[in-house]
Length: 222
Image 1 (cartoon, rainbow, N blue to C red):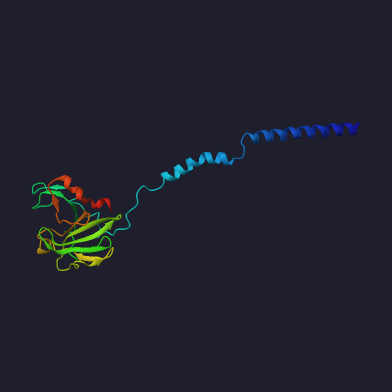
Image 2 (image 1 turned 45 degrees about the vertical axis):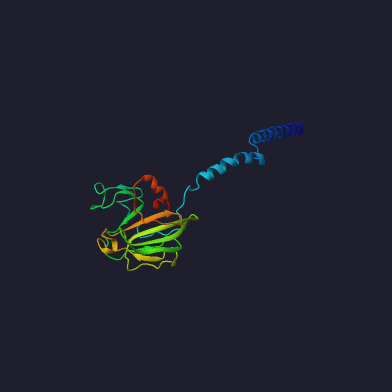
């Protein structure tokens, strides 16, 4: 009699254990291990998220600034600023038109301020010119395209030679003394312009806004 009860008890334990096992398997099957096809179905979402975190723009490290504190000191005349002797932010003003470059102001600095080549290039012009005092024109390439940089109001006594090869970041001169022959009577600042192509012009202003298409806004490449 005791042996029979033991056999029945063991049978009950075995039945309960099997039921629990089957129940566990059923729950596991409701959340199966991912297959290759299920992983592939979410991959485009992962790639899309990665793409959105990629920076849309990076600094143009191929160029050097033409002068120290370049962006912060452009405060009076920007690319395309229209000036007349009456409305100009600089007084007195002798020009009228749309500004073809940017002016980098240094009237608060008494010491020498060096000017640098923005990239490798060849000096096309280096002399005194009306409206600038000392001025340098250098053939460069920006993003693979030919561009001529105009560096105006530099000391005409310290200019590179025409035909000279320069390298990125090389010192090519210093700013001229304000309100002197070195700047043709202008304040101490750098006029910096970028002319498209291989034929340069020293025009600091143009009468029609549409003519600005021959130049590049320097702030778009730095």
